[in-house]
Length: 502
Image (cartoon, rainbow, N blue to C red; front, side, top):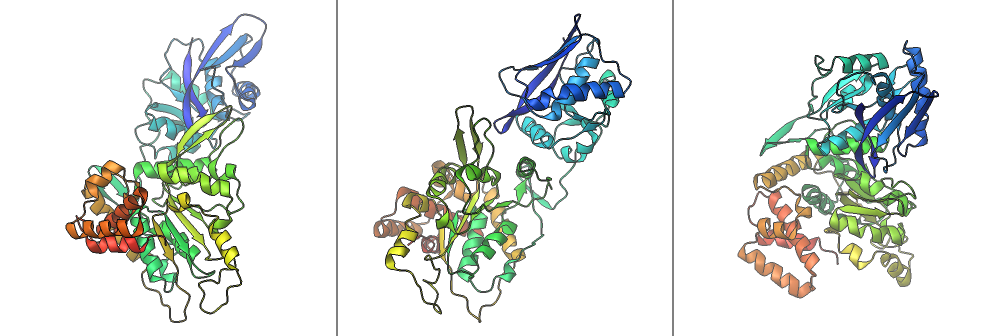
């Protein structure tokens, strides 16, 4: 019995599927077994037409195609090519079990790519399950960005058959593609960056405290909450923050490309982190993912290694805000349904923006607030203490003035973030400061004597919780990194305390 390999999704990860075939004597028939979806059962007609259009004969036998394991539901048109090849190669003695075969067949026998192909192959590569694959020629350039895999591109079914018949002599169709952006190398790992700033911080006039807080948030990947009157620049800062985030490793670039493909976007392979900004009317399922039969990824998952921006934060539903506590703390999200239970990473930088009151004029020196005390308190109570306790940096924006002028550009701020990132990596630290575990805090967040005394005084005075203490240590570590200081000093602790929510 001959087999080749293909793949399908099981949750958000790819699952290897062995495609087997048997051709036996009997009334001519064509069956596909193994929990195949409608998109795969429809492949029977595409395969028949492709064979007959390319001078192949459709065997007048009882044809059974098995998709193993049989307890995993399979879907996707990427199975077409492997099914057709199993029918045509049934009589050959060669072993094809090491080959992965992907491709949708046209009725004329042409091999097409589908949207699932890139994330499937990348997931298999991350799991170290794939070494060589036959893929549509149109997908070669995109797939060549994935390292350590030999790709063989084909345009037609005939080319694919010839390739496996001559598998001992063929060579890969394309060299492994390099990521063509500036990089620096630390500890054998390359970190890529770009100096493209579509939105620049030089457009933000005034708001020096908020820009300094944004710089710290970017350098350490700290969750940040911006509070201020309408039009003071909260959204401007949030949208420009993505362009000054730390450089990216090749794995991070590939992960974001995979998420782009899952979001039906063309992967760009740029060292730019995404920004996801769901509307405050978004449902729980759209933000976190879900579905009764197949758990789909939501905005929180698509923001992995990127920025999640929630504008008008208090107007999000209570269920959404409370559910955010888990990924903000654990950097992953779990979806449990009757038919599926999955867990996926959601390591993002959270940015929230809100007005100080329902009318927005509470902090405005030139306009009168129309809200009563009860309305203001009800508005603030929409954000629970456990949720707010997961915010590292809280900033109250200044009122807009005609004297405000631009100061730092995105290029200048990004340069500081890159220098802090290099300083962090040279220390031997793998995680961003905001994501440090308790053991890593002990290892990397070393305070000098004055800083220890200052932190102890703050703990007593403000009755800080354990989580708050750790967040102050991590924020002060980032401030020290921006100053290129090995130890956290008193001034770093004091600045970190100034960003504490009051």
